[in-house]
Length: 75
Length: 172
Image (cartoon, rainbow over all chains, first blue to last red; front, side):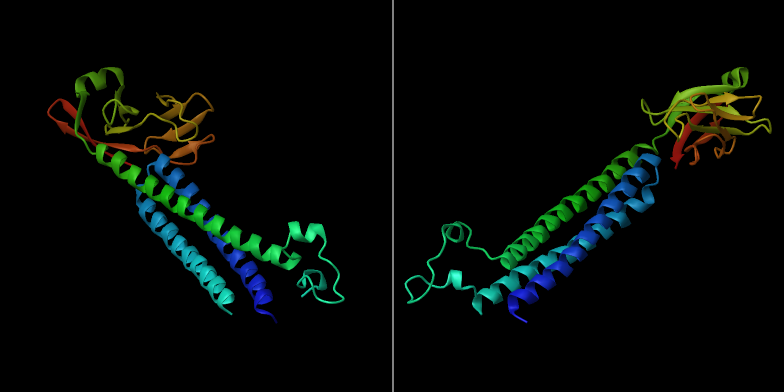
């Protein structure tokens, strides 16, 4: 399998994972706003921390994409 | 590699068509680029969502800080005359209602219905707080017992000093 075809498959899987993470973040934001309006302040910081963790995972995957591109161009 | 994108000038090669010169990306390569761009776009969206979550969390700190301010709301004698008393807590924000239960206990709740924010009123006949907009009813512990509301009313903590009544905090 060529490196480009490997990359296509890899990015499809990565895209699905990042998409799922963004949907989770959207859900967390919805919950946070509802909790804020309802006066339940205890859940807001953990929700923000969870969202940041998902961002870190997404940023890590994006970094991997850049590294993959760099390696592919250097091949 | 397709023969169409072989280098020009080789013997026996077909000349590169015009459309290939304008769009030199192969079908597979086109997918490769768009997925990569999509990952970048989603990561940017992820950053914005995380920032929005922190804005919400920090906004709660600002709102929560004000809710513990102490405030004089009236005298117990005036409350006993009317049966209930309206006030705003935290100052100049949400309307609240203080009342004396049939058991003689003083309680106070936010007057904002947790369904669609109409103002609840004390209903002696039902022995609860009634929302006239959609016929929601809360008992005197603030719990919803009838109608569309599903969340309890925020409770205002009261402190009695002689005949004076003070609001000292807000429980979610």
